[in-house]
Image (tube, rainbow, N blue to C red):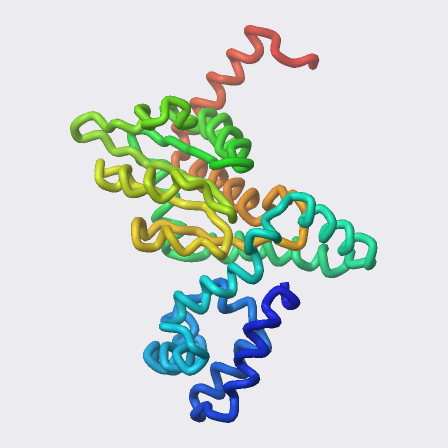
Length: 287
């Protein structure tokens, strides 16, 4: 990732002589951690550095950008532009990592993704999301592109804990399954990673207009969701692998099932017992 952001680092280094003391603080932070430009808003960077968001904005303007949003867009074009989106180049990059003996770094990255899931679990935002999933009249889940399998797996497992858990696929083109009845409480869980499905923001906005609670599991590059719903969970982007099965999001969904089960308590246990009896009746397993 660092080599993909080398242009940004060069721009910062060239402008450094003209920085104020507080701008130099931002410079040092981004030179040490350039990936922050891909993940953080001006407010988030300002909070970490104990400065004002306007100082961050002025910093980016000295670099020639209108603000943090334009700088972030430029950095993403460099890191994930048209060429780097090609699947064959990702494959080549992944093989380079493997051949360079980068197993220790990859293992550490995997640990960081899982740690992030457990850290999110300790937040008030997480507890709100658990309640939305446990207490809704119905829950729908959708995974865009290669994340479809996660939404499908989540719904299949969630149906063991509660009724009315539905996979939303959008095959009809209008997401007709997401039409609440009067007074019905619906929670929609959306799962996606970079590059994000074009329908994601449109569906999230439509769902909110219909009074649906929208929960989004995404990677840390996702910047379109915050203006639509407050229930956004971001996990480390696993860009160092060719076709990653996202460990952070997967662990997050696992913890969601665990905590929803705990919240439902006796109702979930009773439902699981009934489903277990049905499995025995139909002889679904070898032993």
